[in-house]
Length: 160
Image (cartoon, rainbow, N blue to C red; front, side):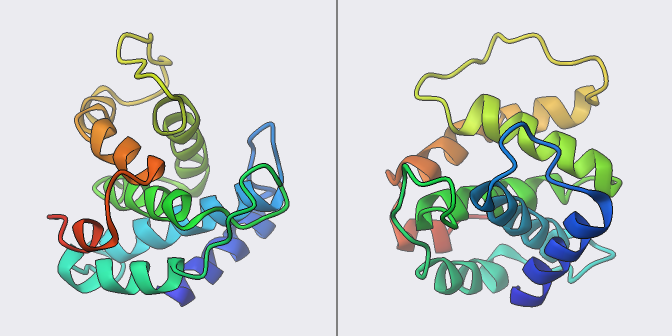
């Protein structure tokens, strides 16, 4: 899991990511967490089950910091868990590195972070309909993880 996170940083460095407006340490770390989730899920990657990967993610994210208003921080444990879980769900698809970057920040910024659900937003035309419907079906879970409503134990017990 840690290797997958660090490979995510290499992908960022080689491709000039994150492409997001807010290119801060927090955005870089959360996207690297997303890359870790993606790789751990991918059949061509580690191909883990959540029961194998969830505890590893939880252990690593216990070291998340709580500088919520500091864009230079790595993200809170809840933010890091939600980024990993979003990457896990994106791992259901065969995305290019550029597509991962685009999809990750689209869903993280538009659906996971906001305080209110935006389920009726128009999806960009370049996002696959199947991916979009699947991620929308997981938004409530992702928001509960990100807000801290979901406990560590509940996070580890999630299904694939």
